[in-house]
Image 1 (cartoon, helix red, strand yellow):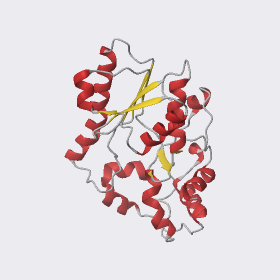
Image 2 (cartoon, one colour):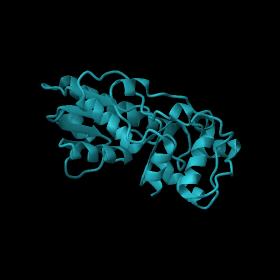
Image 3 (cartoon, helix red, strand yellow):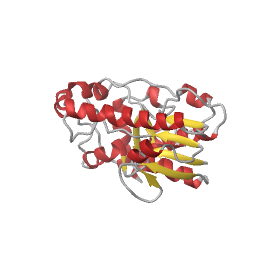
Image 4 (cartoon, helix red, strand yellow):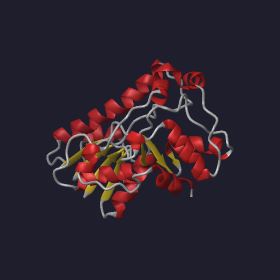
Length: 247
């Protein structure tokens, strides 16, 4: 297939691009950055959809960027980066003479784990130094997924006839994984203790009260329809996912 990927130069987009190309598909990115096999969002809005069999939108500013204050300008960036790109792509699809037969929008997945990026990249050094531990009480659910499985679910949705609706992007083990479980397993994978909790007040101080809720309360999510659609997870359990990441 010829697959158009919005936000394809990011962490998840890189994994998806690699997987799609390994399976013989052609990939074109819609990106703010110029380069080979890329078009800009302005070009997409101006010239319309290039010939493609499938389209994916992964674009979106990282909500939990610790370097950005949770103020009105950043809130607008978070919303616009998702809504505006989706509207642009949806409009181009609606106006295309030959619209793609598959259209995937990635709007919410678990904490994405993987080498060279994602949530673990910010956690590794404290944990390597023995300074890691649960966030807040540690009892809150910790929905997670390996980046290879995010890419795998999207690829599965593009390639499989009859897959539609919402597919939750979390591992099968997510519903039974707490934040403390994750901290313990990451420490074990690194051969380090993981006993120092990050106090709730510190989380609120860094991320602000609204964003802190995501980390301190969590959300219990299961991939029921994802599994029913026939997708087989590469990393269904946390120990195997973390061993891959820290190896």
